[in-house]
Each structure stands twice: as C-alpha cells, then as structure tokens.
Image (cartoon, rainbow over all chains, first blue to last red; front, side):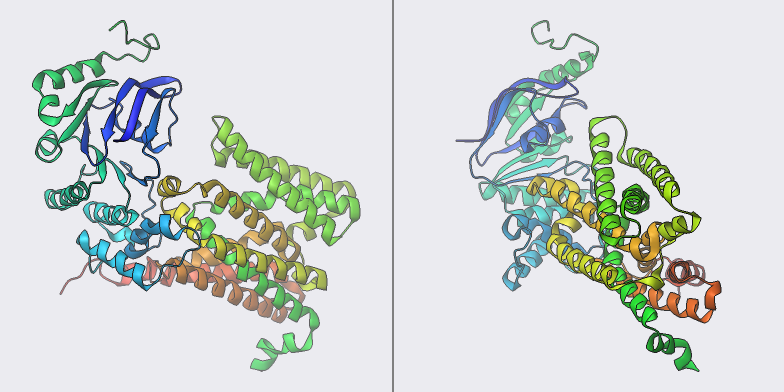
Length: 244
Length: 291
C-alpha cells in the first residue's frame, strides 16, 4: 500500500522543470527524509504533493480519503497579527470544525493537550508575536498534532531551531511514525536523517537514490547529487535527461 | 450648561438625532471592517476603493440628480468593477495588486470629478466628496442600518476563515478552498460600507470612519476580539464628539470633517498614550526590567 505515488512526475515554474521524471512511492506508515543540495527540488516536490503546484507532466496520486497536513518551510504566517498561541494551535481543528463548527469543552481539552505535548503549557495566552523561532515551531507542531492527518509533510522543520527544540520535535515525528502515520520531511542535517529516518529520497532534480537510508546516503551518491545540481543550466535545452 | 452642550442639541433637533443614529450605524459596521483592512495590510486599499466608487455615484447623480438608489447602485457597481478588475490585472500580469488598484482608482477619481462637473456646480462636488451628515433622510438611515446589519452578519459568518486568511493564508489554502471566496466577500463588504458611508460623510471621509478607529484601537490591545470592540467604541465616540463639537462651534465647523477630526484626535491620543507601543509609555517606562 502506498500513501503517495509519483509517476514520471515533472514539476516546475514558468515551464522550467525543477524536478524531472520522478517515479516512486512512499509506503503508508513510512518515515521518509528527502535530502539533496539547494535547488534540488525538495520543496517543489512537497508543493506538488500538497497540490499547490500542478505537475507539468506525469502525476501524483494520494491514498484516497487520507487527511494531509503540510508545514511549509517559511510559513506565510503574519506574526504581528494579534492572536494568541491557543487560537493559532486551535486552527488545526479546521478539518473537523470548519467554518461554523463549535469548538466545545471536549475539543478545548484536545487543544490544551497538544500545547502540552510540544512543551508550551503556560504560553496559551501569549500573542504569537512574542514567541521565539523555536517556540513558534513548537506551536506549529501542536497545530499539526490537532490536524490529526494520516499523511504529514514537513519542509525543513528543524532549520534554525535550537538542539533542544529539535530533539523534542523529532520525538513527536517518531511518535507519529509509531502511530503508523506517513511522514515525509525535507531535511538538511544528514546525521539526523541517518539516526531517525528509515527511508530516504536523495533528490537532485531527479531521484539519485530512493530506499533504505543506509543504502541511499553513501558518499558516492551524495557527491553525485551535488554534481547533478551544479551541472544544471537554466539556459540548456528543456529536458536533458537523455543527454546526461 | 452641560446638558446644553452634550444632550440638548440631540433632544432639540431632529437632524442631530438622525446624524447620531447614522454615524453610530456607520461605526458599528465600518470599524470592524477597518480592523480587518488594517490587519490585512490593506488600509490604503480602502482609501483607493473609496475613490473608485465616485464615478459610479456620479453617473447615478448625472442620470437622476441627488437620488439615493441611483447613486448607491452606481457606487456599488463602480466599486465592484474596480475591485474585480484590479484583482484580475494583478493575477494576469506582472503588476502587483496595489499598483493596479492605484491605476484604476486614479482613473475613476478623475472620471468621477469630470462627470459631476458636467452637470453640477462646485457645491455639488463638495457634497459628493464630503457628504452632509446633517441632512440624512429616512432612506439614507435605512440604508446605513441595513448595510450595518448585513456587514455584521457576514463578518460573524466568515469570522474564522477571515482571521485565518490574515494570520496564515498558506495554512488556509492547505485545509480549505474558501480563501478566494472569503477575500471577495470581504472586498464586497468594504465596497458596501464605503457606499453607505459615502451618503453620510462623502467619499473622502467614509474611509476615515473605517481606518482611524481601527488604527487607534491597535495601540491599546493585542487581542483581535477586543480590537474589534474597541474600534467600534472609538468610532461611536468620535461620531458623537464630532457632532457635539460641530454644533457648539456653530456654522463654522462642518459636521463631517469634525467627526473625522474627533477620530483623528482619538488616534493621536492613542499613538501617544496607548498601552501597546504608545510613544509616551515608551519614553516613560524603562526599556527593560531592572531593579
């Protein structure tokens, strides 16, 4: 059973492909890291999966009836907006409450639970503008918890976050994995990937390697990935796949 | 003495009572909309839209003279047209929404003034630009109250996605497709309130009743609920104070500008004294906790 299946997928901007002919699948309940050099198309791939970016060719199919949650790299979040941490986290209830649904006492309990799970108890009434980068990321993870999605996509969730917060949030990711949710995370820190992510996709505009982390993250593969992105030239012929 | 100043004018004169009802209705719906405009960084959009409704209202005036339905329908049509056109141009071309809106409203404003001048005198033009809050008839009051009712109901219904669209539009997109609809409905409410305000205060001052109370309230609270209530309160106070001052000053101070000046005073006071980043507080209180 695959949660996400990619078939000959090409994604790009302005007709310039950022990802070429990518095929493969993410198994349900798997914990996959996407790694690769800058400009390899990692964030683009996540945008494709969420549906905000339409494929130029090929297709993406998601397992039917599964809820998807996505944490973008730098959320378009307006941190000056006068709203409390509690209300920000409670947004995660959207899929259940929608526009009019009541957020009652039972659900309020869930919100508090999620806030406690990310270690932000006591911050409920703080305006979001007063949070540090790490605290903000904790709050966004609490919102992800409430979204209760079967498929969770994270785009560089630990970038510019201190070690303690990273460890706490990584524990949440492990917990999701334990609950058989499908988690896909774009990461930069190879050590974290080796330690915590069983599956890895090494991306450099196309898949350099995709499979068990130990098999994928070999020195040869990493070097190859770096070369492939360096070699890419936006003035080159539209599709270099066969020439390469 | 105090009675003569604060209550007398309203007890004595029908037109003062009507004016008070009108500006109260206007602040009940306009101020919350102003809060959302401010939080969405669209403060100047409100200003641009206010100018954009002018040619429509002027066309209505050209066809039917000072007729409320004609000017209202014209204003609404022009406002919606400019909002949609500006949005469409921003989406389809390299121009950003603010630039395309500026282009359309400048054209609209020039067109509006031209149309009014074709038929009317300078006095007519002044009326269109600055309104006449002391000459509200039943029809205008019903329009103001109706718009306030519709606006508040719509804001209550759309509150959740509207707030979400301001705080984290990316997240709203990921969980719901309502973002575009919410944005358009909100723009429609802006136009509706501007057209209503236009009849009482004129195009130029209608925006003031939206933005000044909202901007003033932001200096007092960092909570969206309180912000909405406080802005509405400020709007009402400004409306009342403006009428009182204008009455006390006799014919030398017209009521519309007096109301906006009162709102402006509230804004300046808040800017100086406000608990959330007010200037005086910043100067008086030491920047960090020290023993």
